[in-house]
Amino acid sequence: MNNAALELPLPSLDTDDFEVEITVRSWKHDCHTAYRLHMRDIEDYKISYIIREMTDRLEGFIKEKKDAV
Image (cartoon, rainbow, N blue to C red):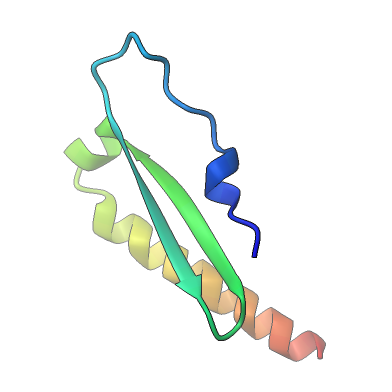
C-alpha cells in the first residue's frame, strides 16, 4: 500500500507553526486518504469537517472500485 502522506512537503524549519497528519485507511479495501493539517486549520476548528470529508472521499473511492469490478 502506497502512503501518499509521506510524499507531502515538509514545513520549513524557520516557522513556529506545526502540522498534524491524518490518515483514514481501509485495510479491507487496501486504500487510504491522507491530509496534512496546518496550524490555521486547527485554529479554525476545521478538523472534524476535514475528517468527515476524508471519510466520504474514501467511501466514494471504495464504491467506485466495487462498481468497476
